[in-house]
Image 1 (tube, helix red, strand yellow):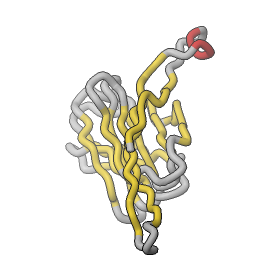
Image 2 (cartoon, helix red, strand yellow):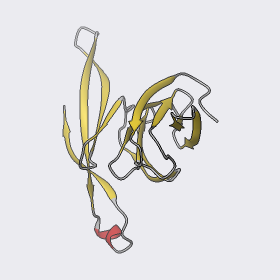
Image 3 (cartoon, one colour):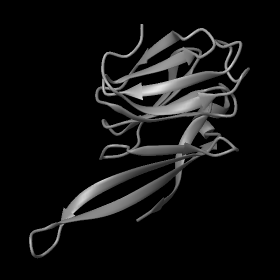
Image 4 (cartoon, one colour):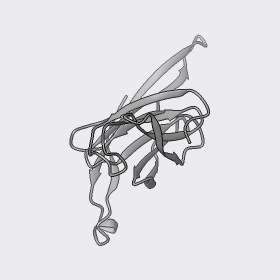
Length: 153
């Protein structure tokens, strides 16, 4: 268990943030399309999470111990206890970064290339804000969903 290609993203997992860890840990994303939860005290991989089809370019830890990952496949995945509990086709383009806010909201960023009139590249940067919200359809089962709160250009 572990990565088979370059690690391209890391996030610190505080002690007690997830039941899989007794002490501090790391979560990593790699070009092998995997997310791995690491026990840093024992230098060992605890969980290998599969759900992306391209590189995992960004990872984070939510306040409740869930893990979040964004990939070049444009997917934002929320993981709990080693399983994907929410998979969103968050972007039409690759997710390059994500930031978990203290309240559990997630910001994701991407870069989309366009073309200038002269034929050169121009980058359009976008940030999406995913807010934790209760959905009418999910309220009965107690599930949570993610909704795009805002998009900036």
